[in-house]
Image (cartoon, rainbow, N blue to C red; front, side, top):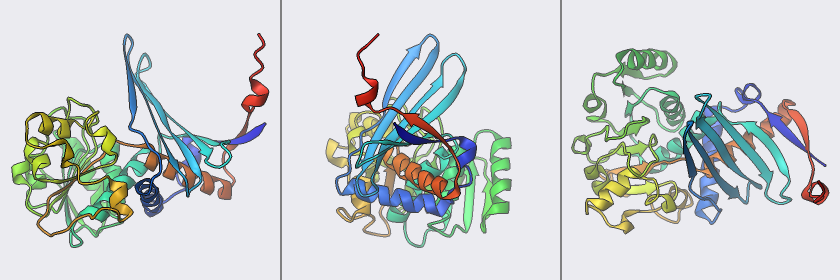
Length: 333
């Protein structure tokens, strides 16, 4: 039998700080850039009851961990559950099973923060955010560890949401955080733009993006839905989390491809290749860069392993026993 640590959402909530998430995820992407294995998400849909089942995985050889994310959303309960299995990449033994909901905005935000650090201008100080949900919060919290924001503008179609978001972060950040009345007002003149929405159609007018802007789009991963328009993708140095997914579920890339605005080789490099120094990031101050984030096992395994190590140090979690297949596969009824 193998003892495996079970960590609840409450167990992991305060174990890791935003800068630590960013450091762990940056290291995970470096390993991916140097050959670590990762695959895009797989999605399975059911119509009755309506729901979505998703999974993805990665191996981080130097961290010595592998695993991924499996979650359900919708179905009869109308809710979501995020399960993160973590394995030892040397022995193959299960290390932990983590309720992954509370870490989700931070590990996804950390991927965005790594992209901002690699692709945004060093002097970036103004950020426009489209969206006010948990993922938008995670993106702002983590990007604030890699750039000193002076001006933060947030837009949501719901006035109450954007004003509440602005009030919360105006108190928490050493920046002027304001709610604005349109997407155009949020992105015009911004050094960095983040889209974290469930929109099916573009929420940013690419013609408003000034040279030198960096854009992180992380709210959509569906071939027929997109947050960015064709001109944005056409103009951009385009960096996805995984190249393999750009024709699978990167709706903005697919739309630009179908419009004839780009070719399949429009991908500049994966984020991991930029982090590892295999491909350059930003090469000029007037370059428009895009990080297209669909979510991967890279940030998930990196964050989960860090949580696992911190949990061992703090003595939190519950041990459960797993039987190896040599014992459990009896073949008997």
